[in-house]
Image (tube, rainbow, N blue to C red):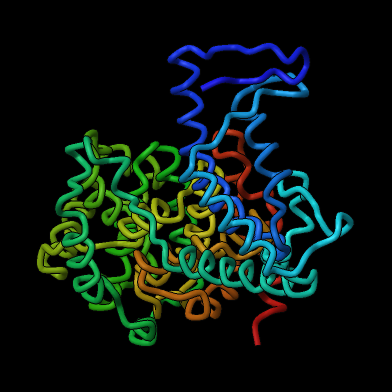
Length: 419
C-alpha cells in the first residue's frame, strides 16, 4: 500500500509498524464513532457530525500536530461499510453548521440531562428538618445516658465495686429501722425540741474539737433520737445522754476513742465516771445493742459520687446537712431522701440552678419534683443560720479549713419557686 504526502506529493512506503497502526486505527474507527454518536445523542440530544468529531478524536489519539496528516486508504470492505453509512446519514435530516457543537466543548451546565438542583426553599426546609431530627435524637441520647460512677474505682479493692449496688439496695431496705417517729417528743415530760437542738449544737462543737470522723457525728445523733424515742429522760440527764451517745459512736467508728476523763472534763465535771458507765449500759440495752444501721452519711457519700461533686459541693452539702441535724422536723424524712435533698439544695446554692441529672435520679431513686418540698425547708434553715442563737454549725463552717461554706447565699429562688 502507498501513502501520499499532500505537501510534496512524494511516495512513501510505510513500514510494517505503520501498516499495523493503520489497520489498528481502521479497526477502531467504526466502534469509536458509533459509541461517540450514541453518547452525543444522550447528552446533547442533537445529531452527530461524524467527520469533524472523528477527525478530532483521531488527532488526539495519534498526537500528530501536522495540519495535513497522511490519510490511510480503505480496502473494499471498509469502503462498502462507509458507503452504507453515508446512505444512512443522507436519510437523516441535515443539520446546519450553527446547530452543530462539538461534544467536548459543551460545558457541564448546558447538559440537559443533568439532575435538577433543589430550590433554596426546599433545600433549606429539608436541612432544617434533618437538623431538628438530629437534635431530637441527640436529646434522647443525652436524656437516657447514665454515667458509670464505678469505673473510677474499678481497681480499688476497698470500693467493692462488684457488690456496691447490692450493699446500697440493702441499706435502702434497712434505713427504716434507723428512723424514729417524728412525734416521739410528745412522750417526753421534761425535755422538748429546743433542748434537743441545743444539745446537738453543743455536740457538733465537741466533735469538731476532738477532730472525730463525720460518721461519728451522724451516728451520735441517730443514737440520741432512737434512745429518746424509747426512754424518758430528765432535763439534767440530757447532756449525759449526748456524751454517752458520742462515746458509743466513737467506739464503733473511730480508731482512737476519747477516754471517759475527757468527757468528764468537756462537761465541766457535771457527771461522774460511774454515771457515764451506767448510762452506757442503759443505752445499749434499750437499743438492743443495734449499732450498725445506715445513717445519712452512708447515703451522702454515694449520692455525692453520683453528682460528680468537687470539694466545694461536698463542704456545702455537709454544712446544710449539719444544719438539718438541729431540726426536729426533718425526722419525718428517711436518711436517703434527706441526703438527696441536701445535695440538690447545695447544687442550687452554688450554681444558682438545679443540676439534678439522670445519673443522680437513678442512684438516689428520687426526682427533682419529689425533693422540692424538703429542699425548700432546708433553704429556710440556711437563711436563719447566721443570725440564729444556735450558731455552732455556722462558726464551724465559717473557717478557711472548711472553705467558708457558711458564707454562700441561700438558694432563695427555691422558696419563691415552691407553690
